[in-house]
Amino acid sequence: MDTEERQQHEDQAVSQVIDRLAEKFPDRPRSVIEGVVTEERHLLDGKPIRDYVPVLIEHGAKARLREPAQPGIIG
Image 1 (cartoon, one colour):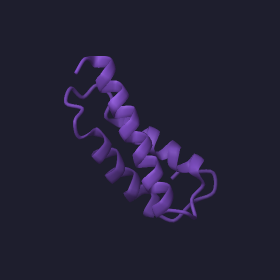
Image 2: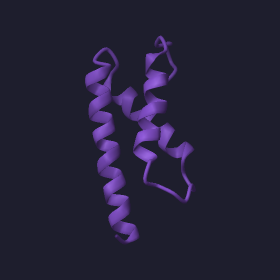
Image 3: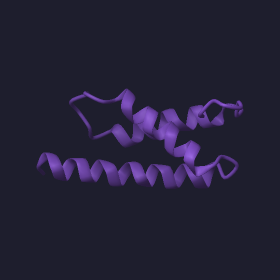
Image 4: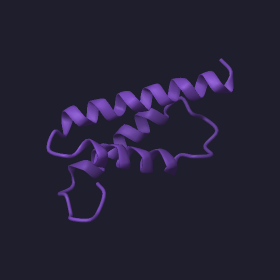
């Protein structure tokens, strides 16, 4: 798999993470979930091994979304 294919695969997996989290946290706006997932993904930028990135993103985002919502703060 070349770099572009890996990126497409990761993008698709991250999209699925967003869908799962939107179902798990229906009280949170999708835009907030997308923002949290994007922030979690950026925390992993530059890491050479990308195979587990979607799992790590989902884990981190779930933890943040479980916290009570605060006005003006994503997550």
